[in-house]
Length: 204
Image 1 (cartoon, one colour):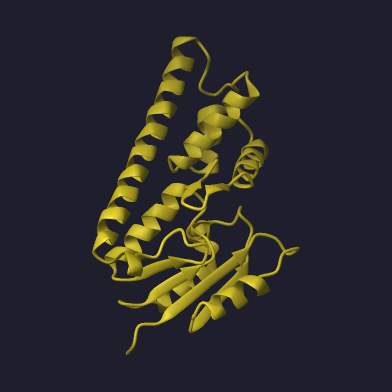
Image 2 (spheres, helix red, strand yellow; image 1 turned 120 degrees about the vertical axis):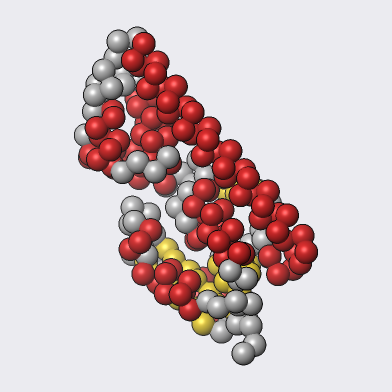
């Protein structure tokens, strides 16, 4: 069977439409396109069309997306998925020209390996910052169940704990922040995902 190009597109609200993305993916040579409207608050496991697209891929196929952020909700998730697909012999191409693993050829493992290494560094830094924050609060007599006084500090702590893999309930237990405020902070953070340049993706 000849290698196929499988497209995936999504928008985050019902006020947006996937038609433009689907048309662009078809024009880019996709044999099949999966698309869905899914909130950024939806868990990764609930992105049904994304997982359908991933299940349809076999070795030598290519996954095509408009931008890399379609592959995950955070930079770490995106890079991990990119690495996993590459290890399975599946290429990834973005319509914005950021990456084309098939075109990279022999350089692809080096580039993906570098990105994976950067993701590991980011994870370690997040864990370190979280542990330092908790240790500081313990040294200064602030209960781990208490609310951080500074609004920005509270938001940073929530984002760090979430990026480290903690669930909303675990974050509540560690910080004392109510679930509603945790969700609000994370939603605002997800809405701030931006691309800083055509060659570098940044998740704020």
